[in-house]
Image (cartoon, rainbow, N blue to C red; front, side, top):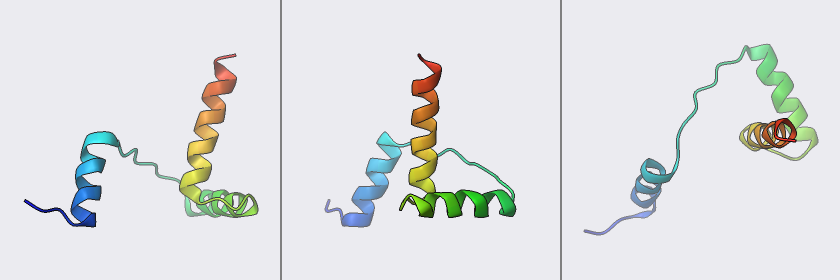
Length: 60
């Protein structure tokens, strides 16, 4: 059985990743996106960084 890139990605995601649905208002999304772009980040990257920083701060 051969896998193409998308099949490999899907299999990897099933085994290694967990999706976390997050609903925010359009206004809040725009604020998040604007802030992320000032740091040259994606919205996803910014949210992950914010979570990591909050966990680190909370564990001190």
